Image (cartoon, rainbow over all chains, first blue to last red; front, side, top):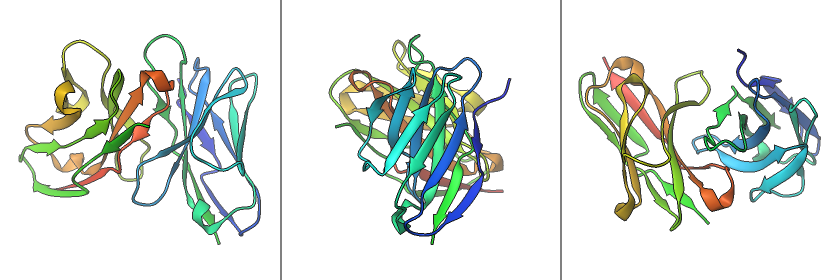
Length: 114
Length: 114
């Protein structure tokens, strides 16, 4: 049973560019959440997708957007990159209903903005 | 808004020593509590979780945590650590009224000397 997968593993972009990160959830999971983990800090919630819609959003600007596909996979898009967007981006999948709320994390995408 | 504090940023101890990591959260309603571990070069893994019932929960690899509601705390313990416990540990809270997004603490880096 494959866990949560993310691509790419590493990415280097220039300020002002746009980036797309991808996530495939654990088999059977219907909900994908994205987190940003800056160096030396805990992950911070960006947003969550369920049934192809954004359900919840953290304190991130509109430059951060996402999408969920019918197969539950998800993309995170960041426009007009800033140096401060350099971080590890984590995807987590879970069942939205069912009581467990346990989230399984992928290995992350390391984004470096220069 | 909910927040999570982990008081120790770095902990260094020798093998066989006991470990206790503090975690306090601020939220007055019903919460689900988690401890995640991130071993060097690996992704976040769930150590243990508390949803309801016995406030003393046991997780993988000999870890346990105690939920003390009156103190808004969920401290992690292990009686005797091993070198392989070297990792970063994150406490996380999910407030049931806030959906299933996780709010993480800043993490504690634990170094176990052989």
